[in-house]
Image (tube, rainbow over all chains, first blue to last red):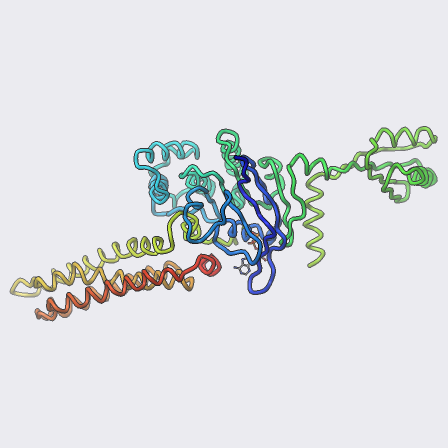
Amino acid sequence: MDMNAIEIHDLAKSFNGSPVLDEINFKVRKGEIFGYLGPNGSGKTTTMRIMLGLLKPSSGRALILGEEPDEHNGSIRSRIGVLLENNGLYERLSAYQNLLYYARLYGVPEPDRVEKIERLLEFAGLSDRRNEKTGRFSTGMKRKLGLARAMINDPEILFLDEPTSGLDPESRMLVRDLILRLSEEGGMTVFLNTHDLSEVEKVCSNAAILEGGRIRVCDTIVGLKRSHDTPVLEITLVDTEYAVRTLDILTSQDHACDCERDDRRVTVTLDDESPSTVLAMLVTNGIAAEEVKNVTKSLEAVYLDIVKRRREHE
Amino acid sequence: MRRGGGIIETLLCTPLSLRQIWAGKVLGVTIPAYLIALLTAALITLIANVFSTTILLPSPAVFLHIVLVVPAFIAVAVGLLGFGHLLLGMRENQIMNITIFVAIFFAFSLANTNVINGGYAVSWAMVGGMLSIAVLLLALISYLTRYLNKERITTTIA
Ligand SMILES: Nc1ncnc2c1ncn2[C@@H]1O[C@H](COP(=O)(O)OP(=O)(O)O)[C@@H](O)[C@H]1O
Ligand SMILES: [Mg+2]
């Protein structure tokens, strides 16, 4: 059956009358690693809490595996895994005891427990620390164990709230590797909150950018890059006169849609034409250029634009 | 600062119901608190015996009181506090502190009336009556857990 793992329809949420989320719509298909990207305070955790049934939407709805995450219905909860900001570990229990505790909570059948716990400890790279109290673990170890803990019930969807924030670069890389392994080896659907664009580029197959409680863009990573990687040529002419002529030529033809001149420099935003078409045009008109640079806007620039726009509003 | 919801937020995402989470909390705190109470009572009995010429032992009623009524009332205290925690967002370590205080208070009052005075202040009827009250109170709180909701817990504790 071809069913979306997650569907969010016209979701809105406000706290005491002040809106936090508005007109949120997106779908996550099975097997995707969906990055929910946005600056701090944009509403990522709130969205996730609604999907987990911890908060009720003010309007609209969230469908998880085709069902609303109803407070009184534990069946959806037994099919998902969750790693929130808190790792959900008991510091006075060992790594093994923590996993055993959650295995019991999720009703993992007794004969499977030991094998499953061993496998998860191995997965988290913590087999040799199994009997140590987790209170003594480093932040990175706790996070890896938290991830293993979230996998105890073989979830169909894994929800991760900023899984690598607060980690040192090495642990960050390790945790990202674990997430990628889950997806590649297990075909896991992952919903991942993050404020880190590079995380999305490294780990995710799809992403939505959330800002100010609204989705600004939502696409596959490839699609996001393609649609936002608008090629921009920066042409520096030998003198201002040439620059003025260049502007005339490029704007008179309806080729280059968007041209700007700053002294000797002309910036051309390309629509359909390739950089070579523009260059050929300059050559046929006998214009001498000193330097031509491709200053394509990356996904990062797009994200920063969105985030900056918010800062300017404030 | 990360806004961490604590372990409770993770528990709310497991298949457990709010009542089960509450009950788990009650058991998890009552047992160690009761053991502390028991230990304290034993210690006081021992000290009383050291300073006494005759051997002082609790009567069967007092024994039952210690075995049934004391843990039941500790459970009631923890149950109320746990419920308050879920309802109002009280800090967890405060619960622990108050509970242990209550447990020790029980142990002392018990040791005081029954062992040191050597009296039989506890009758069978009293044990039965107090146990019934404790069980009723627990049942009442357990029933009231249906009025807890995750949104309130998440927004107050998290
Ligand atoms: N329980 C709450 N009560 C009031 N406001 C809240 C509550 N939870 C979150 N908010 C507000 O909602 C906005 C989004 O928060 P959050 O979802 O935590 O963002 P993010 O996870 O993207 O950093 C913030 O402005 C935050 O202050
Ligand atoms: Mg957050």
